Length: 229
Length: 229
DNA sequence: ATTCAAACATGATAAAATTCATTTTTTCCC
DNA sequence: GGGAAAAAATGAATTTTATCATGTTTGAAT
Image (cartoon, rainbow over the protein chains, first blue to last red):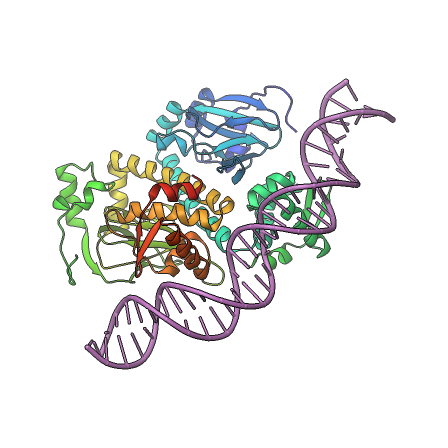
């Protein structure tokens, strides 16, 4: 549980770094990284950046979860991705030379470090391993989004929800999925009411169980079957 | 109109190169590129690569159009992107270290050059401008796909079709849009019958006109309005 | 503990889109 | 240029999903 105040994290000991693009850094690089980053505490529902604004650097998630979303014409959110500890958020915008096309907001209390654009780009220029990691990451995400688009286009809401729950369990690891019904609907790409009705169906089918807002998966196999994957 | 036989293109004179990631190459680089590439003629509906296969290099479109698509559970195609002259196809897979997640097939007769993976990666390693261009391209496409996902999730088929026609006109430039109804449906993400009915509506609303398969846009403004963009 | 707003839930209705069956038109290839 | 196969078009019936209205629960702040 993060403290409700600024907490300084040293990159050397940062557990999140082990899962991040910085994992292969040598001691010297880690030291450099540590001297350049600044740590902040974010409370729930606090934005990291907003669609349309100018990117100034990248965010390194130490703890907590963040939603990445775009807004449609009527302002409705479409959640594109959920980030958890270790992920570096906002690095795509470092290369595009354009304003953010998506927004990022915390879903819970978070400890997040910030690295300025110039420091980050310096690292990318000089560190081949980091650069290759980033190129690989960009490519992988591009492929993931192709799958996302295909699912959106071809699967029913019921199928997408089943699939989404499985994906979300990976994000939440050993915790239960803890999202508002609206956020969940905005991830699945449906109306909140439709989502609630389908959750009810899944409960009746003993695929999931809810504890107020939290969702516990009872049968991953069953969900996989429903998802048609 | 491409010749129905192998045609050797020299990179130096290649008009497509002017729009490509290779546009900033100096004379020496162009010479190197020219010596490494091999040209081929592709007929209509010929695959460049298939989902699941191992990437061996990149494809440089000299002329003609190519569809990039994924297949859903039931084998239905979802077209993710249409590529035209100047585009380099398949370079994402050079960095991911994984089999192709999408397939690429020609939509018409094409002249396409091939550059092997090792030659391409050598260029990326040594040419900073090319590398930065690629990182920018990857980032931009990632943002585009976020928009694509949002449109898929929140817009009606009618809105998506209007939007798609505008996008397609950019791909087809001064030509008329020339896709089978099925391909168009697989791009918009709908059933072929639904697509055909909507095209009929658009015809009645004088937004488009059809010449057998070919689609002529009569009112881009009208389509924009319908698309809700 | 109490309160109040936000989130959750449910029902009824309407709209959007798919599916399946069938006919007409176009394409292309010999 | 003719003929077969593929593609396009249309109709009817059904399913899926959204929308709107409204009631209920939950949880955070006092």
